[in-house]
Image (tube, rainbow, N blue to C red; front, side, top):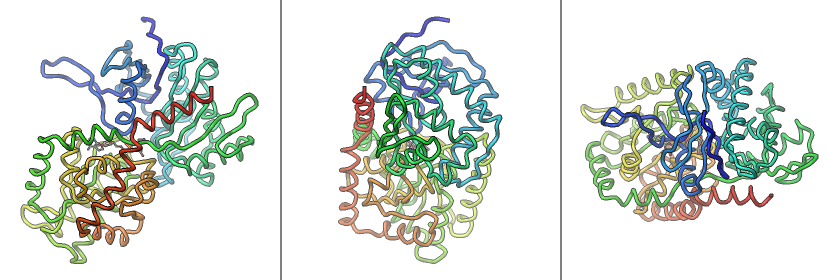
Length: 465
Ligand code: ADQ
């Protein structure tokens, strides 16, 4: 195997930021993948000549390091068993539901934990190999919480940061985890542990005190030989990219076309999510359907477009959810649609950034109702795209984004009655009210975009050297 090129800036994440695709000539090539984390970090990576350590997405394959999209990519091999136990298992069946308020029951199995430890060690070794002396290494997300400690043991010279993209649960829930102490100690291997919200950071500090018996002071956790800082760094979007997309003439024409295809209803409502039980898709469709049931709106007044990206389809919980949503959409249309005019248009697919931007422009009301969400970039993408100040945002109080987007129509997604009322208000808001709210939200998103997020995190990480 060739010696990997060493970098002074290394990102470690479960997935590499590219997917394999076949081009027109039948050649295999790599294309930037969709998803929150990649959308956020690729622009930063391209600017610093960094290396990215991660799995390339298919099991049992050895790949040499390669270059794509202006980055050095260092693949980590996962076997089919690793994918099942570490990724689908401990990451997505244990940690994901535990960290999202136990919306689904977490699975606690020792075999999954062993795989998590084993695979985390492999990532730590790969990062240790590509990092130059004294490099900055930025570890991403819940799949790799043990990497900071493992990496520090191998390479005490490195400056290590960790960022958690999802919520960090309160003591009362986190305590359930049989490996709670190991996870906390894993994270404490970092110099800086970043979270999306203030609450998440303080949950972490409190847990270090109570479970690891450590001294803490505001944002700091004191170890024998060093101090670990825990703070919040709310992630954001590439606002300028989105503004440019929304100005693109093709995109604007496509938005008009979409509205026409939908029969030019008075209001177009839109949901865009990974198909995940944390996103509250069922609750929002229920609220919307009840507006028809209550006869507050009728066909022609409003159409709901729900785009759900296929996600984690090998995990049982996700297959059940997909069936339930499809049943729900079928029922709602069966009850209230008219010939050629469904009330809900449901698409189980992924879209290009351009098509997504056109959808954002076509939507009068963006409906983002997660039951729990670290941040939610869709809400911020919508706001960034609406330079015309014409759209409204309905947003769950339980999305990290609600800490910043105060002028959204905030809802408790568990409260169907309240949600339908707010949706109705958002649909019927006058242009002045819409503009007032949108202007304030745009100011926040444009001033605090993804560049600032990365800069603030990395500055804080290097400041402690
Ligand atoms: P996710 O749970 O994936 O991210 P989110 O923040 O909404 O959720 O990001 C989704 C991204 O995928 C957005 O950029 C969106 O545009 C894109 N996307 C969604 N559906 C799509 C579709 N059908 N076609 C194309 N693109 C689509 C996790 C956390 C979040 C956190 C992010 C970033 O769960 O809370 O905001 O990481 O930290």
